Length: 77
Length: 411
Image 1 (cartoon, each protein chain N blue to C red):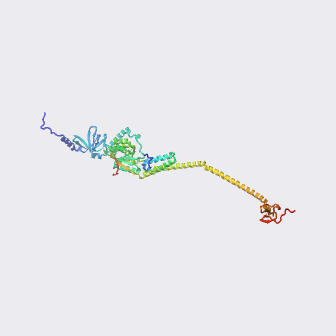
Image 2 (spheres, rainbow over the protein chains, first blue to last red):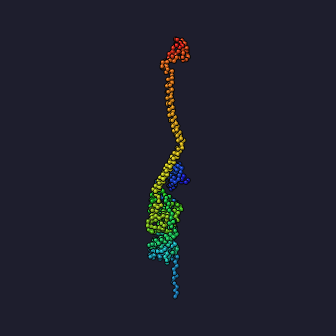
Image 3 (cartoon, chains in turn brown, yellow):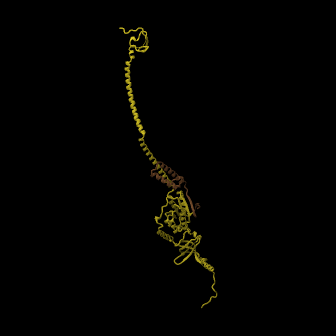
């Protein structure tokens, strides 16, 4: 499923951000039928909200390469 | 004159002989604590962790060994062609029947030796085009996965993680731990870079180490490490030592940061705060765009509605109604006029009628006489013989009378 079809909540920040960006540009540069424009706007709002939530909740994930595996990194220094 | 020996020379086993040579060499205190200088060749570092190499000068060569514990303490990674001073002692490797130098400490030979090596390698790699600015790739504005190659226990890692945690906690960090100094460092650094590129595919790699002496940082001048940086699929940001330290890795990296902390900052051009305000900006533009479109739509709708209204049948109906109203006002006015005229007319007529009315004549004292039997007006006496009953109508009231006498016109 392409990012443009997924529910905003299922997108990564990058996907949501890129989707928001393209919706804004689409709304600014093209004429859409009003119902489509409103649908785009509503999706943009949801994406923007999702981005804010992700930024709010983000926590740096640190992992470690050990051999050929990627494992959790315990900062044990 | 030839004199036969009284006794034959003693017969030694090889082991005895070798041991004797060894004792001889090892008993000479001058050979047990010394510095020797030469250029490294045939350098090898097998899995055992011991180092083997040959030191030579213009006249001779010397086989050298450095045991693993000493090798592990050494910061400067060795390589062929490097001129060094080694401290140690002379001994004998009995199974090989070889005397050799057991090094326990190695340092670059004299001031400027490492610098000269640095310059030699730098110009070699420069000619190859490894430092060409055109090879440098932009680091991503918004890295999702950040690879880090550094020591797992160093302050550099802690500093970088702190910066990344603060600036871009959205990112994911994968550490490929590697010693950053000593004999193992170059190989381990190359392996860490390769593994990150093949197993993790990060968007950017931070290759970092905290400050130290030129020997401490030497692994980052190692040819194989420099080549691995240049060959990295992901762009590499170097952050080795302090601001004033330059290593060859810095020249090969896509971006050079003065410190590990700065490397982590350069890897995250946009912080969450920046991203927040960019997202807010988009949100504003989004709202502006839709509001504009709605206003536009409303205006267009209004214009159309007005145009529609212009052609609306209601408008015609209104006009018709008005005409009707007009007509009805006019007609009622006309009617009223007419009625008034009629009324006037009727008055006149009724006055005329009044004046003609027999009742008016009666008022002047005349009477109307009719026969009661048939209601005929009585014009002459013959119509009313004696005894007939007549009705006399006066201006006020009537009289019923009986004829007593009838005379036809007496003259």
